[in-house]
Length: 530
Image (cartoon, rainbow, N blue to C red; front, side, top):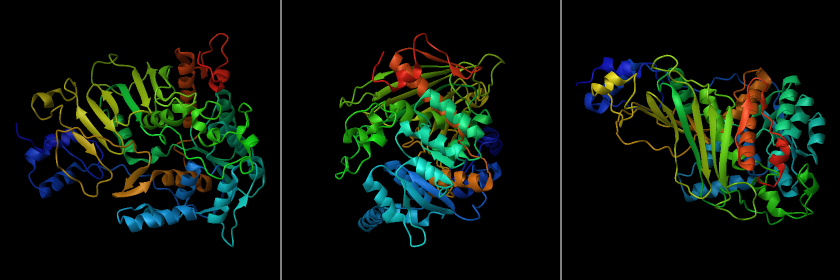
């Protein structure tokens, strides 16, 4: 059967386009680029563009950074503040490799209306690096020894929290109770009790809270939301998403600074609510490996994948979670698992349907992670009518047994082995090259997105949205509601792994269903596996 433009328009009706799009029949029906462009014009599909935010007017937002480790330094760079050491290193890298664009990307980044005025870091070396790199004659950076002193100083109106997990909630609550705006890294909290307390503080505060899930700025995820809303996939009954790492850095064995010692680190302040132990550089720099300070795979990496899909599907907290795994790749004294699988059940969730009413309902979300293999397994959403592979790009295949596309497949207008749609916001020019080969997504869209074909730091966009919310009162894409859902899901997973049993959620009372004689927070923080 010959392809017609009408067939193509019918097949792709309603799908957005930006960057690049492939239509399965394009190669056989449209022989030239000129004809292809004409086809795309006729399709008239609107791209998913980033939100247009009003300019952050008025005096610069006075920001303090709490925690200047790996993530704290990245966040400051996204705000427009790069250390002297980083600038020098990137300059050398660019001289050695003309294609190394990190420095050029940083310099071309839009300037945000921000003054970085304060730092609180309990490691002297890091605090001094902030002061030396970011102070100006007119605006010296002031160091505060405690977060309470910074928040109550009256010198900052907003803080960024990039500390170990066990400090997230205490700092965020303190700031919100003093009407200081908060940007907090994930997971939002370290315990269940903190999660409710932080939600209450956010509701009462005049300040704005943003949780650091920057992938909400990624265009492919915004496009995926549109695809699901238009029922292109039919009812999605299963999602698979994964973490795949295979090196010590990916397993949180970060470098230990040569100048770290009891004189340069405030060890007692680091411990906070954690069990009192002697000074330990391994725990300080590699805190993600212990439940006392971090949340392991469930809080550090599962939260990324859960929120990536929650921003597409708005599915909320699962009805139940069952987790398994163990310490199988890095037996180095850690007590958090390095291999984890979590099955999340959403029995009442529905995305749309093309079959008889009532036939389809419910979804399983499978997250699996290993820190011992880097084979890049993609994120897949499996619907009755189609399958979507989702990362920084997205690809959709029709299902061989689809109800919606049955006639087109029978007429050979669609082939289950050939993508019907591919969205690549990184491409400069629409490209109609068709391919039956499955497109493999190398990344999850966590670092970059693309605007008009140019690569843009998604963390920069997330921070810009937060600053606009502070000055202009605009909506935040990852506020307390999304943070609450992320944190509870992470804690249910951690509990399930530790207890070796299913953990259930009651959506009416918004509580984890109790288990006799079990203190959930004590289990989360403890060393034991039950």
